[in-house]
Amino acid sequence: MLDITKIKKDFPVLENNSNLTYLDSAASSLKHRKVIQALDNYYEKIGVNVHRGVYKLSYQATDLYEEARSKIAKFINSDFEEVIFTRGASQALNLVASSYGEDFIFAGDEVITTELEHHSSCLPWIRICNKKKATLKYVPLNQEGRITVEAFKSVLSEKTKVVAITHVSNVMGYITPIKEIIRLAHSVGAVVILDAAQSVPHMKIDVKDLDCDFLAFSGHKMLGPTGIGVLYGKRKLLEKMQPIEFGGDMADLVLKDNATYKDIPYKFEAGTPIIAEAIGLGVACECLEEYGMENISNHEHRLCQLAMKLLANVDGVTVFNKTCETGVIAFNIDGVHPHDAASVFDKNDVCIRAGHHCAQLITRWLGQVSTLRASFYLYNTEEDVFKFVNTVIEARDFFRQFM
Ligand code: C6P
Image (cartoon, rainbow, N blue to C red; front, top):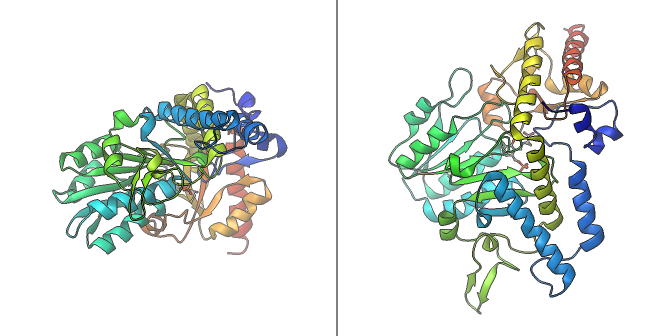
């Protein structure tokens, strides 16, 4: 069991905003004190570039940056060279599509994706498929809006070359049965790109056990800094892929009309890297490990279930996800525009998200233009759940007067 009273003290934003009920961690989590300290430490005591300087401070910066890569590799059980630093999950997913998609997708090939995708997962492949005259197929969702293995089988074929799929939906919180999907995709020789932006922060991820080919996530959703993310890729795939950005620190030999590039991961990290943020993300991984990923999943799952149970007794509210698999509740107050409802939450210092959550396909599938989303994380409490549910009731009653 997590000691939430103690944990809350690890998050300065909660200390500085004593009345805050933060239920928007799926958008961005709060930042751990040790992460902030790591950023301060780098900027105050080191502050110089990596891989370039031939002086002690630069060696220290390089050591911290590469140590962070090791920590992240350990966190997801990959090899060191298979961790590429990016600006976030979006850039990581775009990197794979732009590099692998440009060189290994041809006319007549098939790519599979789903309506549960965040735009960062499906848009890069919509573009590649249009450009290459490949066919983009969507896994039909079941009645609850889930991806099932059976439905995946119905679109898989010998022509499938890529599967671009979410591990956990940012709108519904559903967990994709990914191990079986990966096994099936591999049986026809397809590669699987897993959008793990909403899973890595909340559950133990082992890329070797999953056997995924690529995996993308963002630091800012897992107690870490903004502006940093990771693309994991299997070594043998990364080695055959071309860089998509060219510049400092990624070239080996440069001639007037050609060049060779460094080995992975560096050929994909052109220019001065995101140093402080990478160091911060390494520390965030350590913090998560210290709390225990299983403890985190159990805690947020418990809060989510409590919220769902209480909401089931509130009439005039539609909850879109049928079960709590992670810490996400997608809902609307009947007849009330989500942005209007969100203003009541804001008045009560309850932070939730309203909108299409950069996932228009699933929002449309639900027959909505936008939804409300509450997302729980390790620093939330039962009191937060009660305040959330009371605010739902308050918002419903307030807008009912005008109906
Ligand atoms: N979802 C949300 O509120 P970036 O913005 O690059 O850090 O992450 C993109 C991304 C990719 N995949 C999934 C499943 C995501 O949830 C996100 C980010 C936020 O749901 C912001 S739209």
